[in-house]
Image 1 (tube, helix red, strand yellow):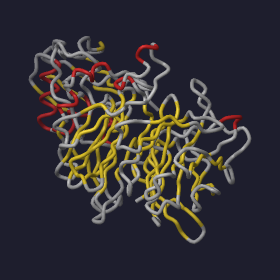
Image 2 (cartoon, helix red, strand yellow):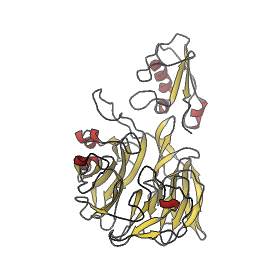
Image 3 (cartoon, chains in turn green, red):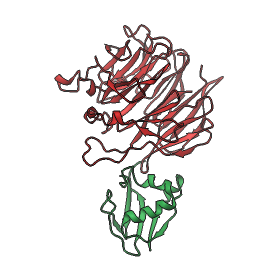
Image 4 (cartoon, helix red, strand yellow):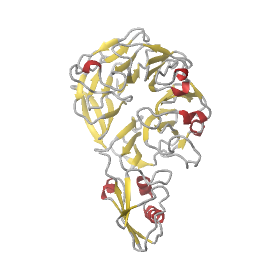
Length: 89
Length: 356
């Protein structure tokens, strides 16, 4: 099972519990998390389904490479961290 | 006269109340989050606030109790972007204008979209006629990389009519609730364009457009290249000249007197500070033939406050003004700008000020 974990900064705005799921791509994993918490989607993705420019995703220690298509492949036990990029203020 | 006002700032939404001793901060919502625009409460207490969370996008919140409690609703959003679409990405960056007109609420956005809600802001629909107009992709950014739809002027008594302003995309009007649109910027001049395009209506940069409530054919525009006024509901615009500068961002139109309006001048245009470091408001009472320069109570030395386009407001009586700056200065006037009182000198950067 892949594990998706979200920055605790999100909890100020929306339920952002971690999510365990069967997923072969980043998009499938995020969709599984959003199915449980629909309002979370708009905080991570924009209306075109792209990763928000100031949100960063790491998969097993490497930054995701496809912020628009979210096609990055997952292992069966991948750990995904959804974080704030260091910007804003 | 209104006894309540609002300041939307980079670190929250401030509610202000006029008490015996002057204006005071009453309440703070969304502490530490940027609030880019608000719609003041109606008689039932229904109001909206647009947030721009730096990492997590633009959000919309509704209150049914005049700002005591809030709940998030779906923000306006663009439909799927066709691969061949030109122009800025079809992504909401910022809620930049909110206005009621009849039973509708209209929302202007960066990047230049206009949305309408018929259910109090719970759901939104993009005005596709304007968005898909081929002239729209010619719009440019002004300050933001993407165009900004910042002015929405409903027409009292004509609920299907709106005049809007876009930086940089001119002024437009609909008389049928957004089904058809026409440019409405004849007479404006854009000296930042190639000479042959200086008069192009679709290239104008109106920083803000404000309508006289009681004489709605009269509109005022603080433009990137000066001040313009229309007496024919935007069919034609006439340039006006004010001292110490005709450059600025904000304009407030007197609700009853079509000859009176206020502006906040700054040095044109890359420097964007008060002329000589001394903050003032200019006011015309004769339709723009002459301007008073109002300084009493405003900082006159080493002042670098800029007033953004939504940072100046006049109340429904035309006597009270409020003005908020980029460096967190907030001033109020109870005598049409003749004198000003400091409400606070150290708020967060102020994006918008509204009475109501």
